[in-house]
Amino acid sequence: MNRRSTAKIRVDAQPIFILSSSPWRESSLWLEVFSRDYGRVALVARSARKRQSDLRGVLMPFVPVEAAWFGQQDNYTLHTASWRGGWAQPTGQELMSAWYVNELLLKLTAREDAMPRLYEALVDVMRSLSHKEDTATALRQFEWQLLQNLGLAPDLSMDTHEQDLDAQAQYWMLPEHAPFKVGSDARFSHVREAVKVSGATLLALKGEQDWSPEIHKEALRLNRNLIQFRLPYGLRSREVLQQLNEWKQQLNFHL
Image 1 (cartoon, rainbow, N blue to C red):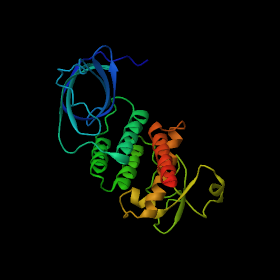
Image 2: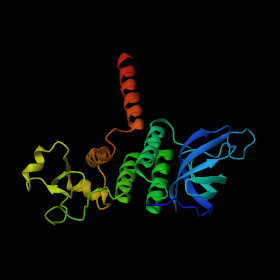
Image 3: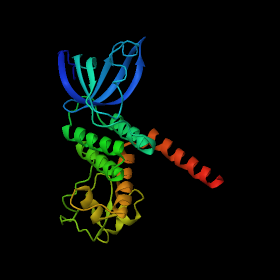
Image 4: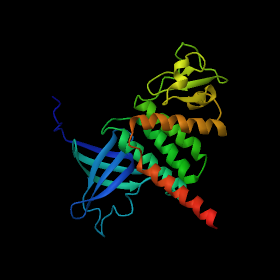
């Protein structure tokens, strides 16, 4: 039986991003944050909702924050927090994409599982969304880095026949399976969950191929399939974005 740790710790000057914030008791906040060295952590920011609190205006999502906290497992108290600078919060559709990134982290990561590489990927995607620079590539790369860090991404070192990936070939992709080259196994052409993508797309996810519009489309379809396999009930942020796009199309039609 795992016993809850009673060891008290103190963490200073830790880079974090705030994933969610909700009222807690009379004047405090309950925070879920993603930190560089400790992974996802729950913190109580005492009296943070009071007008005179030094934390007002600091505890914002999507921007780099530096924090210190103390306590024991599942019972940490935020001590200090300051904005590290870097960029302003994203706006428009990029804001919805940022909420989507946070929702992925909240639903797929476990608390206190350190993943420094995933933190760096989070820095990169939030910077891109804020500056509205190459956001599609940043989102696909973040999704893939998340899947890799969680051990949920297929192994792309070679295909099922232990052959190197071919940029010109087509592959069937299934969750928890290595790539199946189209034509090498007819079974997968009839599997509903299978996604067909080019070798170029798989190599782009590995960082060995430049991105093109077609690669973006295929990577989106592949990543969505892999994420939905783990989150069968979907993501609220994606549903909201789809509704907004539908309303925009309806508005343009009537205009």
